[in-house]
Length: 209
Ligand SMILES: C[S@@+](CC[C@H](N)C(=O)[O-])C[C@H]1O[C@@H](n2cnc3c(N)ncnc32)[C@H](O)[C@@H]1O
Image (cartoon, rainbow, N blue to C red; front, side):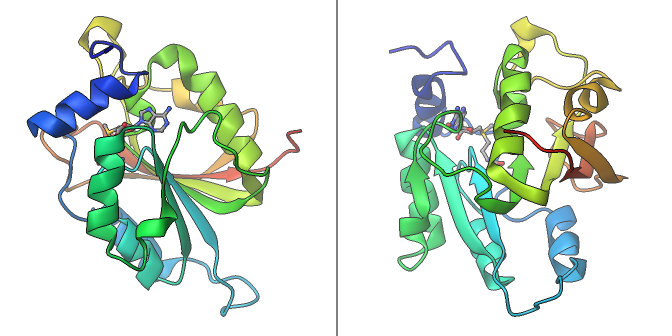
């Protein structure tokens, strides 16, 4: 058992089992609802874009993405989270919730149009951020979008997770493959993130092998 290392599933399993999940929104945040209402539909409105929700936790957003016309894949490495997300997703969508590690799960490159971020990036230790960026760039289609909620708070490794971004450091990280298309404040943050959360849409640009 490794309950002290956030890069290990035991850390998260123990928190879900103890019901200590202060990051859990218990529903779908307004920023995502707004995006889904106004999102660009592309040249073929009938096409079902593919979305990945890495580190999905309870997976409250799964049914919302599906109702908005997305083909959803949710992934979590903690068995308790997967169980919870499958229950919340319901029988039809439960098979779309996979147990696996975001960094090495067997997805083909350029599989997704959208990758949805909420409190997954801030749950991994800051040394893994370049690996996160590279993995997102690999899994997104060209011109795909990494979107969702990003946490800004200079990281104090001993205090995390959550591990925030110092202002400007997300731009440095993502600039290699992404352009920031939207950056807005978040008004319905949970206390843990209040005043330090942004809704952002990062568009994948240059080629990444
Ligand atoms: C803070 S929780 C966020 C859950 C969910 N995104 C939410 O907003 O409620 C972080 C989640 O990421 C999962 N996780 C952490 N590292 C992971 C990895 N490398 N691969 C897959 N899941 C991971 C944890 O098991 C946990 O469920």
